[in-house]
Each structure stands twice: as C-alpha cells, then as structure tokens.
Image (tube, rainbow, N blue to C red):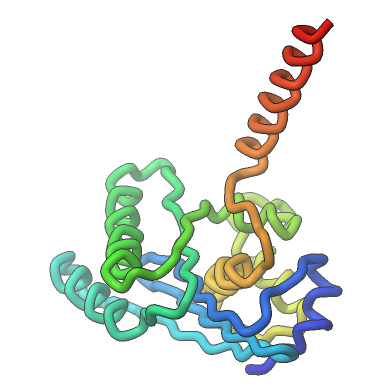
Length: 199
C-alpha cells in the first residue's frame, strides 16, 4: 500500500520523516505488525498478523521470538505497545512478556525503539476512543484509520499502524500528556523561583 506523505501530513497535522523506516508492534495472542518506509514523497505500508492458536505458552514464546528475529531489521525504528494492566493481572503479565520479546530483539539488533501505551498513542492523534461506547476503542481506531483512506481490514492492525505512524513523526515526544504537563509545570515553577531569587 502506498501513501502520499504530503496528503497524510495534512490529515494528521504532524510533519513526517522522509527516508525513514518505522515498525509498529501491537503484541497479543494475535499480534499486529505494521511497517512504514518513506522516501521523499511516498510511504510504503506493509503489514502482517501473527496468530498463535496453540494454548502452550512455551510454543507461543518460541514462535513469537523466532518471528521477531526474522521480521525486525536494524535500520527500523520500533514502537512497541506498553501493556495495559486491566482486571486480569495474569493476562497483563502474559502480554508484558510478549512486549519484552520485542524489546529484546531491538536490543539484540541495536535498533532504536520506544514503548507507549495504547491510550497515549491514540491520544497523540486525538482519536475519540469513547465514540462507540465502552470496550469498543478498537472500532474507533479502525474508523480513524479508514478516514485517512488507509484500508486495513483486520482490527489487529489498526493500533499497530498508529504505533508505526508515531515512529515516523518528526520530533515526537513519546511521553504521556500527563508526564509532559508535569514537566512543563515543574519548569514553570523553577523559572518563577529564579525570578523571585533575582529580586
């Protein structure tokens, strides 16, 4: 799939990096992976869904690690989804392992990477995750992606696309809005203290 950079920039209100490669990884029992590769005018979009039918955790770990080994390339910037700790703590621990496998592959291949939660990633684009009601955030992300005229039929890919897109944004701060606001507040406080000290 090919995307015209200038048109996408207008829709998302972000400047995108040229001649850059980004990979977004949404790890789960069904893992979505989106690869973006830009030149001066076009982004090439490729994707894959890794689905593990087995219940054997060791088999899943082995398959996932070997898949990441083949897919991840040194010249890509990786954006890996952080785990949301929900009601099922055991499920969250399992998802955390999957994310750790992706991080491990980045470290082994000396790849630059960032981690970000799904909610923070979606918030960077102002996606209204409550639009379709509770528990239907993927549907909202899917609609947002469709509005960009990008056709990803599998909902396991839409968050991976959001992650990969964050990776190709020029000068993006991956911290949450709360963390950014806290730092701004602290800097403001420090400046006020310095002003008072000079008087």
